[in-house]
Length: 366
Image (cartoon, rainbow, N blue to C red; front, side):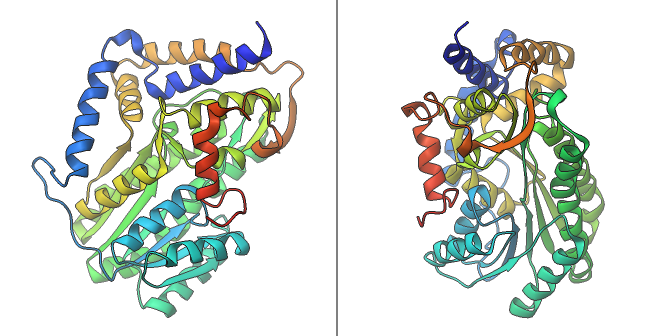
């Protein structure tokens, strides 16, 4: 099979995993119609057996990993609701651009350079946020990293980095804000996990391990903290067009790995816009939902895995055969923007490239 065709097939196959990995169950089409209808109702302000949500105006929202991508989109959406924003990320220049972008929507914005894998830096940033705004009403744990490639190219360091950022990087901020929230008897914690924390996807094993841990932490928090008036929302996104494919790290056969990842993550058949995802997350925060699956594809895949785990795993094994193999693969990491090919420079990824420019993934001002 020609390389170009295999990359395209691999991307489409990986997207199919995110879209359900269970087309043989015969429910994909009906499920899509149902979830699209529910999402349309919610976007119009109608929520069956619930309400539109509490007013967040004037509340302080701290978001980790908020200098670009989904974190930046959520910051803009919270700003539209009249919130005061605290943006945290590692890169000060990215934070500066993000602050300017969020400030256009009104409200106060503060930034703190912070590596969520470092407990001391986390506590320093949260102390700074308290000095600026007095208290933190909503904590959004969003920071993440991703290393894409066959398991034979992944190292112990890849697993440690994933756990440090996406598990401990969720635990540290949470434990830092928890005492004040419990003492007040109010507060919200939003944990951005992943469908990869419900179903482990090939070539994303370190990422999946960390996200599974984050899901377990988040669900346990919800059960324990409800009695204290602290609400915990577990967000389970599917594929989103955030532009993050350019900054994700790739191992193995770099161009091929980047090819399937970029194609599946920017294709509108398998992914949703980051603006839409941000709106859903903020609305779920206002409504105090316990869990939100972002996209019907993520919801369907999680349900398929729960109902028929063996069938789902066999489907994933078949998909893996379409992805680049590990023979002669490199353990060196390269970012997506350095792993381009003719396929990924084509109009097939145009929506993803647009999102990258809009949400600070390229160093350009939106």
